[in-house]
Length: 606
Ligand code: AMP
Image 1 (spheres, protein in one colour):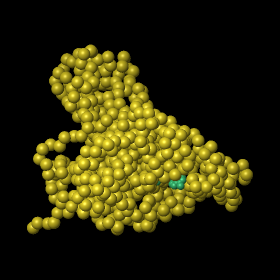
Image 2: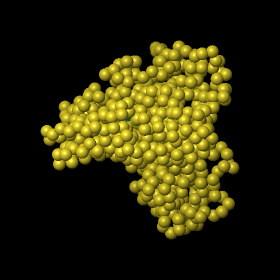
Image 3: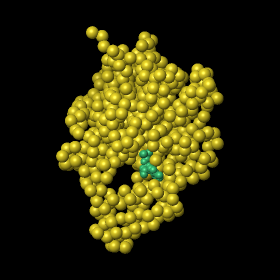
Image 4: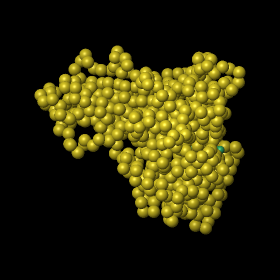
């Protein structure tokens, strides 16, 4: 019996620290925000665990924070990559991805009520997220029962939405879309300044025709609107303490109420010169007036931290500000006039605030989902292997940073013998554990051509023509032993390298007759490995007998456009090879994800 082919449906999700949003592409190929069940375009990323076992997500959960702060989780995104959320909830230790999954489950439910069944999503993350945090985000999606089609950097999503809007506007007019695809006059440099509720990102991109290339990215995963709220909160609480000799910060309920009042006061100061902040604690009441000038003074150090990163990123992109055509603002906190003033002062131009700061990232994710879906389908119907876009150092022997000519000066930390307990085989550090390729192709063959979901052929052409390329936000290196026992981080792929990339470096064994090699991979810029994040280990067992000290070991790190890392270590004489023996201590393993998924599936989320 033949059954009708069905196109899978994917949405774009901006899983924000304080607010989340979701979008899909309508039949004309235009991104549309999907409102939640409450009818708002964004959903507070707040989770309230009711003692009954039910879970409430969004605005009602935020209100519950005042009465039951111990049962409410806010800003779980800041904890992604950690093993457990820092405090227990209803007596349980919960991994952050499982909490994110509850937010995603609510978003999925609400989206399905509006647009029908959803198979999966592209979820966005700050460009500055490291591998562990990306992994945790993917796990969150999987636990929520979503197929994570891809993880996309938030600034790339914002620029994609910006570029797509411009391309589509022209294509909806008189221009021939094919001419547009070749139109190199569309070359623009954009800087995306994204200050959300809990994270800050700044990225410089080149938009050339339909090509988006990230030139440099920087950021801070612990800097956002919340910190501005906190400055107001501290000032107000100090004033209260001076007046009444009692501190509202010492009581969870008074603290939560004060936090909410501080955020309200902050938002009011974006449009008014002055605002009031009221607080109640132990039956005493106080209200202070805050002027915008006072607020700007108390938060100047926070703004300066973003300015610092802005300068760093433009240096890394090797461009003067006068070559930047567009300064795009993203994230709710860019509504603060101090941000816009600083951007104008530093960049010498008025920031482009035409994108909806709350929706643009979700729109970019929805566009990326459509592009990825069309490309995957196209690839599945082609028989020839598909070339990878972008440069790969492995394609160009001359560019290999091997140290053939001279003997190795430094050698990786290769400790022999290796403890057999270290030999756990786990999956790489990149994206979601992918299904078997054959299964994927069979799955795609079962689907209808995704372009059929758009009435508008030109929308499909534009989507097919867009390419994006990325850089890595953190350096990747291996731990070496230098001299006798001093360990250093030897960078293999420096930060801001164009992706995909594959770099091979030559190292040597530490001792004569070494029997195994264990290459430790770290993420970070410090030369001290202890200051970096260990992300995995690759072990070659059974080296040939009789190797002299300093025998060649080639280490290859291959990093793809979406952040997947493959590691390969090869002993030169025997060809013994080990690949991606990655062990992320904080990542949830497949059976933990499975268990969490079953638990979340049973939970009532509203
Ligand atoms: P996002 O993560 O992009 O949704 O941004 C959320 C952050 O933007 C929160 O810290 C909000 O308090 C902040 N925000 C939203 N509206 C305003 C406003 N009018 N003025 C200042 N901050 C705002």
